[in-house]
Length: 119
Image (tube, rainbow, N blue to C red; front, top):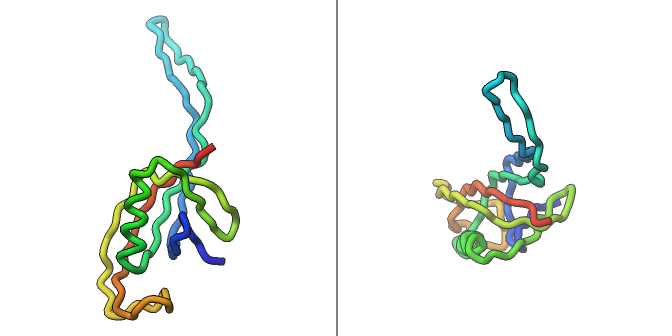
C-alpha cells in the first residue's frame, strides 16, 4: 500500500517514532534525587521520503503554515498529524520512474518531515 500525507503521494524510506514522558528531576540540598512525572507526549513521527514534482513539494511546504492536521495514510494506519517541520533536498536524477503520471524529467526531492500527532 502506498503512503500519502494530506493526499500527496510520498515514497517513505524511513519512519522513526518518538515517545516521551515528561519527568522533572529535582536534586534537593539534603541529597538524593526526586522524580516527578507530569504526563507524556503522544507519538510523533519523523519520515524520510521522496516527493516527485514541484507542485507536491510546494503543497507540503504550505502545510507547515496552515495550522490544520492532515491525514497520514500508511500500510498500517490512517492518523491525523500536524506537519511541524520539513527539510527538502533536491536529488540529482536524470530520469524519475517513481510516478508514472508525471513526466520523466520531473524533479525529485528528498524530504525529512516531522509530524506531530493531533489527538
